[in-house]
Image (tube, rainbow, N blue to C red):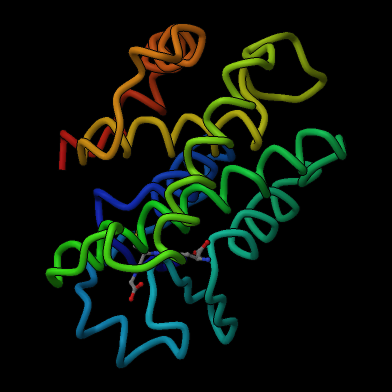
Length: 190
Ligand SMILES: N[C@@H](CCC(=O)N[C@@H](CS)C(=O)NCC(=O)O)C(=O)O
């Protein structure tokens, strides 16, 4: 299996964790903006090649990897909803981050302020929930929890937010950092 992506992408990180958890043999091919634009119609990373199969999104890659290993991908609807909400916040945060790199600030368009509000409100909702509680699965954390962890860790790494207002989320990231597959894939180790 060949995973294409970067060591800093939170979407790629989640796939790497699932590949490690399921003991799947894979290689990671570092892929920049130009290459992803050429090799994937989505022009994003990650994407995956396995024999003739081409997958273009972290969610389909996760489903493939988990199910190939005999695991269920989201037995729990609430965990799936958390995954979707965190994805919404993460897509918004990456969008703002990439626009800022191109010189456009959130204050320049009402829609970008809406994107920022999405991030803030989803962080607040996540702060109010219990995390890292026991769940019925083969690994210490569910995919909804791993998604949240990858997002928070990326946001801290890229200084998109801090967790001063979110002490429970701070404690959750600390707990995840004790999980070897999470710690070993930290973007600061890229
Ligand atoms: N829905 C995609 C999102 C992936 C994504 O946004 N990747 C970022 C890197 S962290 C990217 O490649 N962005 C390039 C772009 O937006 O042009 C997934 O889950 O795989």
